[in-house]
Image 1: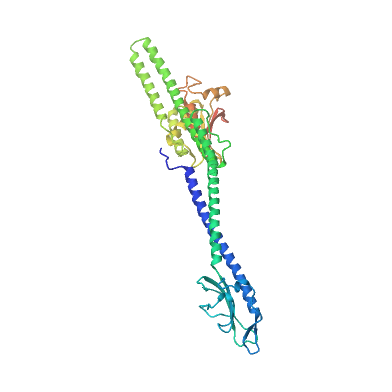
Image 2 (image 1 turned 60 degrees about the vertical axis):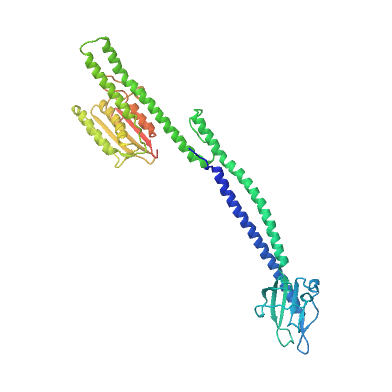
Length: 442
């Protein structure tokens, strides 16, 4: 598989760097705007103080004209076109700062009783921020218009200079962020490298499971699924080995019979060959059918399968008047395809019917944690040693009873594949109880 261009590291770095760049630019712009607003508010406070100082110096003369006790003493007001200006009263009849020289300010709106900001063109064409108000001076017949102004050029230069410094600072911070992000991505992906190394160890046969000890909790579900997959693969391999062993065991007796027949040729040789060939063909067909991949994600309802098999057993053992009872939880489903469920239950039911004296009982149900099924019979039962031997592949406890000795082995293969367990216990009917339990969620 070609994974070029699908690097998780590159994707994380791209997303992180793009986000970091956007945040850096946004931070630089916000800092510049904040500095501008703070500087403009500072200028406004200066203008308010200057305006109040000039208004406080105004007075009315006895003839009702405007007078001024003293002029503001700031040096900038005395230097022509210095960038700081003030004016009180109309041109020719009022007072102005020397810095205005012969400049006449032009405003777009009339002055009001409350101080108002307005930007106008200054004496040298610069942007001038003004604060203007119309006040009533005692003993002066008409209201007096007073304004003060500041050149915004220095403020704008300071704002631009601050923004430039901010861009440089945020660029440096962005580079630092990029370096930290690269380190973070490398450290963050290190557990994946460790996981890959453990998977490689499993591939080389150095370990059976991944385990995931010491890996982050976020990788826990992935490790669990991988281990479950490995377990399923191991069970599949084990089933294949058992199938080969079963086939070898099933062919051993027919081959021995053929060998014995070949040692004593006679009229019955052809019949023996046909009979044993049929047995071998049946064994091969049985293993080929069992070798088809089983789907353990399927679900099959137990009751219909059980009803079919019970009816079959009643016909097979019709001469024995065998009583077969079934108590199954309604709608109970087991995690098997229908043919696998038939094989599982069929082997258990066949064993129970072969050994029972008069009665077989099938029970099945569920708990919050497990699905369970059990078969009880009133036969001779099994001792602990016999129960252990019965679970071995190809072992027949009584050669007089027909069979291949593979029934319980096949049952255990199916149970292992679905995460189930088989128990051989003493039944309350006096014989054997074969109980299986399957964990829910497998």
